[in-house]
Image 1 (cartoon, one colour):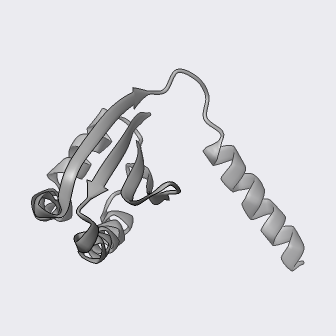
Image 2: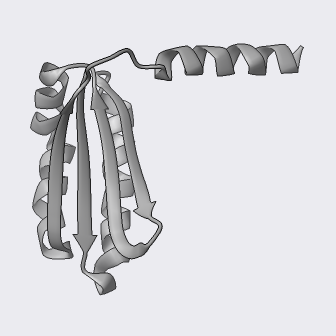
Length: 115
């Protein structure tokens, strides 16, 4: 797995634009990127103009494919005037992950509840 944590400090009066850009981009990621396992956009509890992305890719090749997508290139270009700063942390998985196991368990529980 290849993981990024990206912290965006958005210009306060441009938050709506940034959030709309993110919504459009995430929809395209969901539709076109099988190697992107998680792409989470979250609010920082203590900072209303901060957005934090958690991005999990199958591997570095999946990340490279993500970066090459037209929707990603558009996002990277259009975000610049909306930001005061950004910080990117690249993480490498050093142990097992539970997301897949959790998702399978949740699906099984939902199926059992429907029966």
